[in-house]
Image (tube, rainbow, N blue to C red):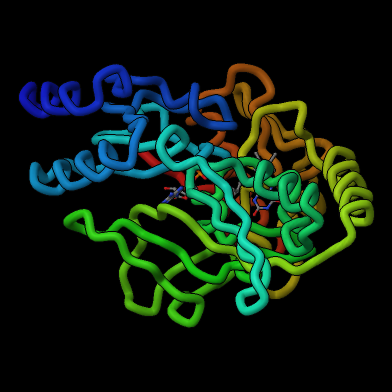
Amino acid sequence: MRIDSKKWLASILGNAVRFDEPMSRHTSFRVGGPAEVFAAPESLETLISLVKGCEERELSYTVIGGGSNLLVKDAGIPGIVIVLKKCLSEISFREDQQAGIIVKAQAGASLSALCMKAVKQGFAGMNFALGIPGTVGGGIMMNAGTALGSMENVLESVTVLRPGGKIEEIQRKEMIFAYRKFGCKAGFKPALIMEGCFRLCPGDPEKLKKEADEILETRRKRQPIEFPSAGCFFKNPENGQAAGKLIELAGLKGTRIGGAEISQKHANFIINRDRASSADILALMELIRETVSKRFNVELETEVKIIG
Ligand SMILES: Cc1cc2nc3c(=O)[nH]c(=O)nc-3n(C[C@H](O)[C@H](O)[C@H](O)COP(=O)(O)OP(=O)(O)OC[C@H]3O[C@@H](n4cnc5c(N)ncnc54)[C@H](O)[C@@H]3O)c2cc1C
């Protein structure tokens, strides 16, 4: 990156910018080389100036959330990585007769904070997302979910930042959802989600809390949360089989390359067992794909986003 671009970034962001920032510090996998620029704007005004300035200067940027669905390559990420945790982290509830219960959650807020707040207030609808790490923005982009539901079930509208700093609201009827995928009918990929509005319904706080405890306990038992990972590595194939089951049947549980391992607890989790590199994880990914393809004639697609 040119020196004048670096100077401009330092002038608008101050201490909120870092150069050559290791992405292992910002991903749940705890791997990944440096982001050329890592920006965590502290106000909405700074965020808008940053995005507009990047467009004018033709600097590429990538918005990330909690980094819990990312595998960043060892070579790092060229351009600017933007996180919204400091400038867009509010959650508010609105209840009226016409609209019902609407929760407005900014993209940088944590998804688990949203779920826990809903439980506390006695609002039902978010429990499906309990235990999913990351932010509201990342959850929307991934149409995050479980067997109990996904963002698609509760999302009413999404506010996005469009080129030129224009803020636009996308209504539910304009959204497209697929398995771990979100998009808009207008055809553009929302490069920066600012907030989401979720429609919930009245519930019994005690019942919701009991359900929440059970969901979290089940997740703790089934998932290797004691090791760094990015959750399920592969999507379940369209034929209805579970990717984890195929990996297990292929006899791959416990297989290790370098510091990366296929979890013994849940075969669709690749874990960073011991100082893995991104290359170790990618090699294990390839081994799984090849083995499952040969054994079952199924091509596994990654759920984890590989960047860099
Ligand atoms: C232990 C563990 C368990 C998990 N369990 C589940 C599960 O049960 N169900 C499930 O669906 N997922 C699960 N995941 C995966 C992950 O937590 C989810 O996909 C989560 O929603 C990602 O959110 P994030 O904020 O970390 O997004 P990131 O990983 O940071 O980003 C994901 C994608 O969204 C984009 N993005 C993020 N924020 C924005 C934004 N504001 N605007 C535009 N683009 C954006 C990024 O560029 C990237 O392409 C799990 C992960 C772990 C580590």
